[in-house]
Image (cartoon, rainbow, N blue to C red; front, top):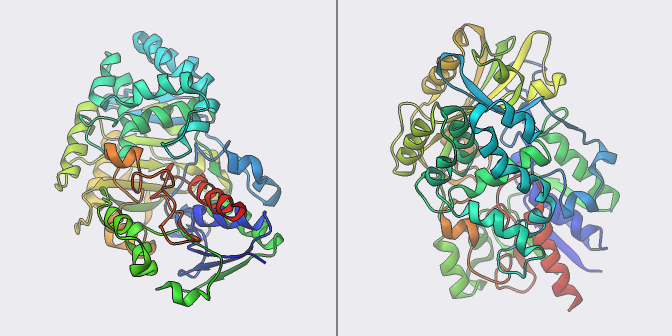
Length: 471
């Protein structure tokens, strides 16, 4: 019987394992931590009963993919929940903007810029299913929907600073800046709009859902399906080399490229090893989880109903923060992503106590304490926030890496989104998952299509393995 060992149980490792197990492969998943899930773990970090997501909290690209259509995770306990407002962006003096599932409703709130918002996102949202069928795959392939992809690509190629000229108001410009900042790239960089266009369109097509009960529900559903296929999942097992694995037919590595090279060793062909050693990691994050007495008192009313709140001020302010972080300098006013998962999923709260998720973008490997900066940014747009804090849990940049070794230097997206790596990660190749050693594949977020709890990196890597098996 064909056998496989999957090293790492993040969403991509579990997706690779499930894809192989469903085809009759005997699969064992080995996880170094004491619990499965990688970036989809959830914990009671502050007060008993409050559920916090340890890393990945919102899942706009996980709702409708080849993986999600193949495996019915809902039948194994996964339930998606949506907030009324997908994401918002508060500005000073109670101003701000909000993105809804409806392009029309979003545009209505943007006044004179509404028609321009519609011009960018409406056609993309209508065609997004076809577009994702192409960009959730490696870049070097024949497009299935070239015309749909062309419009998406023409906008994605632009720097954020250029595309933002579409809009004239701070509200519309900042609404796009907040979602574009997920790329952790300078706003003057080519292709820096790509992730903003993708996530902004996804908000209008699929929304930005959360998993009921915490992101760990995603991993639990996948493990339940794996066990139903006869697969084994073992925790507390650290893999240092292929010699530990006993010679399975396939090895799938849900690890950063550096760890993959360490495990596979000198069996990796020189040209592949050289390319993977050049792989670059991007800025890190510094995360603080809060327990608050009631909701955050945002002056911008729509932010109180938002699942995600982008905190950073105007386009120009966020652009400055992105530039500083990418130059290795900590800004005084960092971009802060605030997760209010409890808005969509009240089961995460206990009484009036709410679990609040917040992280600041910081330079890779930064050793400082961003807690005061994060609180100051939230307080700026929600006066009285500090008075509502019941408890805190701080996870520094080093703490993020300790929690998940794939997050080198606090890089939670497992690789810089510079133009080359955004298009060709982890290296330029027809099969970017192959490590050049028969049966050995990289399946982490360092491979296409990149970060997110969509599982598509694992699905794609497993499909490559299955094609090799059929040959």
